[in-house]
Length: 173
Image (cartoon, rainbow, N blue to C red; front, side, top):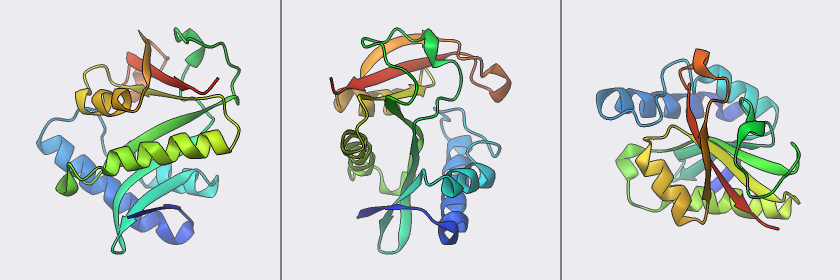
């Protein structure tokens, strides 16, 4: 299992991966409230072009994916953050997904560990993220890695189907 930074050759495979994940979520419990509109090919393409789309690969197959950047989606100023940091001083994890067929193999933890270590190495002071408040699997994963709750807030993303989000942070300083 390895994590790669995606390039233009990976767009189809990562887009297809997210499509499979969304299809499964729509048939079961859609904890993150994702749809065919997000995450989608355009999301993957944009993140790949900016150098922030990553994939977890095993035996040539995408088994996980995420975006790691320092661009908040929505108004992160409303968070109840333990440390006052300016935009650009913290990284953000977006659209972290694991292949449902490989559950309980530690893929999510592996990807979050990568995000934490890369963020430290790149000089960020924290990692932050937002999650749908009842996305219990994601919350459990992030809390197991030391992330702490920073409030449930309206980030101004209601038009994207996420009116209220729970915020989490892991501070390095």
